[in-house]
Length: 253
Length: 241
Image (cartoon, rainbow over all chains, first blue to last red; front, side, top):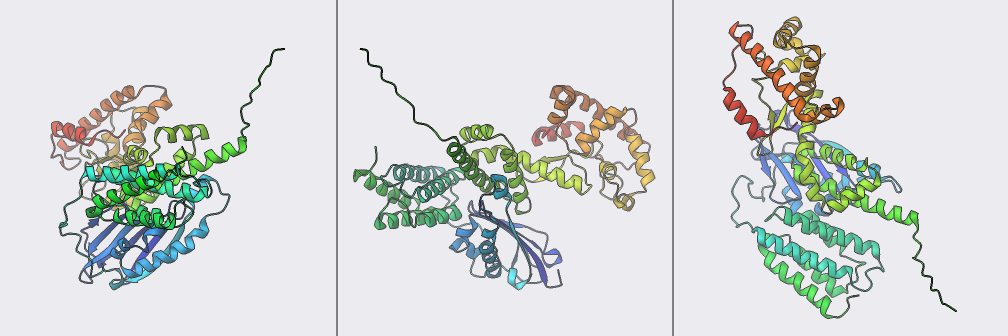
């Protein structure tokens, strides 16, 4: 670490799609720690800069990082850190060896190290200060439970659709991610899960036993899940889609 | 002539069954990594803790893994169950590796701090902020930065006066190295309560020695808590052993 540079260490686990990073700020920042943990998939830690005005990134972790890194949630990170992370995620997939055991898969990792300037670690100016209390009223536990239940109902319906076995791998992947999304929403009421939702949307792109319109409705509903204030609309959209799939008499009973 | 109908159950391919189970375990394990990371919310520790928890699961026989998945289909539920202890174990390991003693407690807000340093062997020596157990587990020169090694040995001997070798070893394992009392009890073939009672007597003896040393001016008086307060503190933190 030089006078104006900090060492950034990143670690990516491709099997679980988790990225974590630590920045050695040393004397570049004050000791105070500002934790920003507004959702279940992004955890950021900042320290007030001594060498520059503003908050400097000191640590972070992203769950479902490969899906999250291109979403709006990643814009809370400094742009250079996002770029480094993107490169590591891209190259990290190579750490997964086909035919490896479960332990080898879980342990597979890719590491990266870089030296960034203080300016490159500053919190983006267009992002609100995490120290100011949120203005929006947090969604309550009941709403979280309703969204989770609507997702699970839809998933169990999709599983029973004829054609779900045709591209089993895709369907299983989507079902697994959607169920994880429901579990995460229920686990921390009021908090969104933008990484898990983005991963579920990515899995819903093709291979599911849905027509293009249904897929589009599904993806719209999953986008609404990212915004807690839109959860009532998300529940309506998910419930309506489930009812339409059910009503069409397509279910393999 | 009597007609006999023979029905046969469809043959299952054992290899396909094994592959299916293996895939299920792998998917659950990767979801468990994410769940533990979400629960930890400490980037510096989360990765190590998550991989440690998952490897513990994957080291089980396949049948046991499947039973676990059956019991906890949602990995978040299992993560919530194990992550507190895993974090304490992780921090203890780190402290021991850094020669900083190992007794830690998790506070209500998730932060971890040294536990009850005034009462037991892990007591401050002078003004350096180091502790007797720090020095005891360290063979490195770090001890000489705080206090002369001979002084340290002398202080430690005085603090542990009246304890036999077994008692000193038990105290060292639990308070110095952070080993779990349940594990040690299993090793000795006794129940946890037996060792807990024995450890309480050992700690009481150390406390008497410590008070005597303070009265004699051998170590500075640093006690600010009363035993009653300490007991309340221990109940608040909960015993992690």
